[in-house]
Image 1: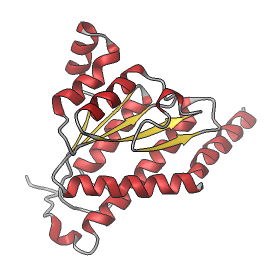
Image 2: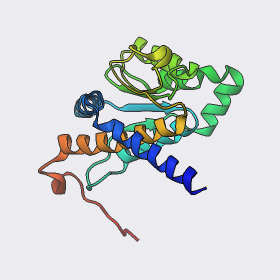
Image 3: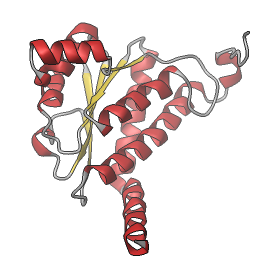
Image 4: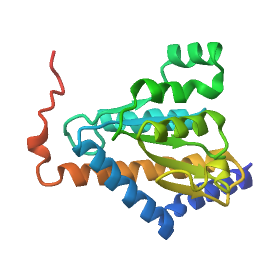
Length: 204
């Protein structure tokens, strides 16, 4: 048991170390700059993923609509995770269309779609990217393994290679999301955070 735990911990560390690679650092920088540009221009971010990646998508969105490190104004982000939409669309049209329908409903030219898929082959993410590009949205993809069918499709992508299972890829994705959002807050609010928002911690 100790050996199993130690091996898993080492894999976790290896996943985090992926962020030190030049391609990861460039991905985070370019993505943060694009996110900041989208928000500065009055547009929004739409995020989607399946399973654990859906949880990461929701986490991504709430760090933007809430705040990460410092109080500041809310940033418009939507995770395509609403149960009514997912089950209605999945039941009536098929699960492959749950995210593209969300993009069709909420996406506007100038918005940004962020997709997370550890395989790069999730049909509903592929369809969502196609819908986003058709509607004039920019695209960022968090991928894994060899990038799958989505390799080379988005404006910006990061492929976490070297892992056979989704959990380690998702751990790397989430670490990158945290660094990325910290960078976005720095780009948008650095130097005037205290003036950007008044936060009421106890309004009762």
